Image 1 (cartoon, helix red, strand yellow):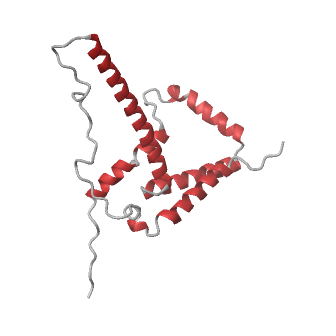
Image 2 (cartoon, helix red, strand yellow):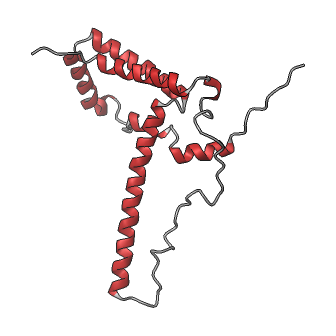
Image 3 (cartoon, rainbow, N blue to C red):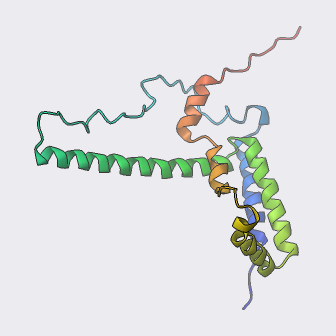
Length: 183
């Protein structure tokens, strides 16, 4: 069977996507974070969703213990849990999009360097050897480093990026650069 491409072309395609988004989203690298917002986005404290402490619609008065109210409380707890789970997934998707739209330029450059190294390694070293070394490292990690905790590097990278709500909150906090008049 003939292949239309090789495996090392996947990271190269992601690098091309990142560089294309760099040209599209940040014509001026100094103000790349602030140039994405159309217009003035002033956010008041009422617009920001505060965390609910659970005493709102889900609370039930102490004097009534009917099964109807208990079922309603369980239903509201379930709906609130589903809403939090959906919010977490949407936040991860927004953070992934913000990685490719150069919201945090340092992390986007870091991703370009990492993908370039990965493309070079995949070009020079056969994929079977790469998978063998990765699996060997994965399964012998507890013998080599017994006191090290496991972490997920992609989620750690995404946690350093702001979601869209955090971007709007940061735009309110960051003061504009004063224009210096030179005479």
